[in-house]
Length: 113
Length: 113
Image 1 (tube, each protein chain N blue to C red):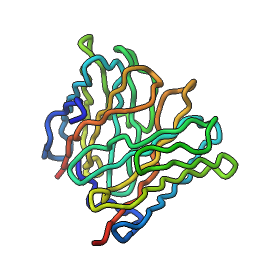
Image 2 (cartoon, each protein chain N blue to C red):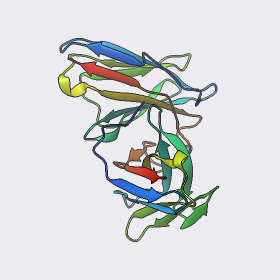
Image 3 (spheres, chains in turn cyan, yellow):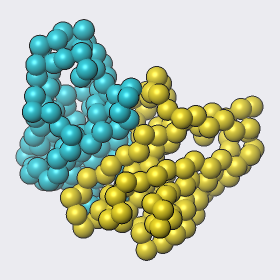
Image 4 (cartoon, rainbow over the protein chains, first blue to last red):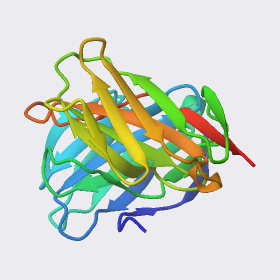
């Protein structure tokens, strides 16, 4: 158990809908990272937050947004969903901004029908 | 968190043999590298890391080699066991930079009994 909690584990929705994925980092970790894992792309970095502030952005679509709250949990919002958004979404946490080990959650599997 | 279904290169190794998993990284400015293991149904798990001021680092049954000249990393697993069957990812980062970890596409390791 990495200590990172992600909910929901599985989510099935329709095209055009909006979903929110939630992540609770390990106790004491200030950084949260979001990754998308799909069949063709491997692990794609989406966005990173450190202590409530956005620190780095990757290949995150404009339809997607995220935030980190004062209690350090994070949410990833996916809107106007398309079939191609079906993927595993992972959250990872680390203590610092650029420290070594990332601790990953078990992922949220999103299926868009 | 399963990665089953990813279209990945596969390495098949006999139990007890040594495994070598290779990774080419993209950014010559990257100065920090990590290997992750992802078992079926789980999120990626940290194995070993190495900074660019080193060319070799050893852990328990694992060794990471870094060749900065050709931007190449390898992960060596000694005496491969059935429990080593998983997908292995390398990740690169710039510690003083933008903090994002970029993952490679991964290699599936199959251990044959």
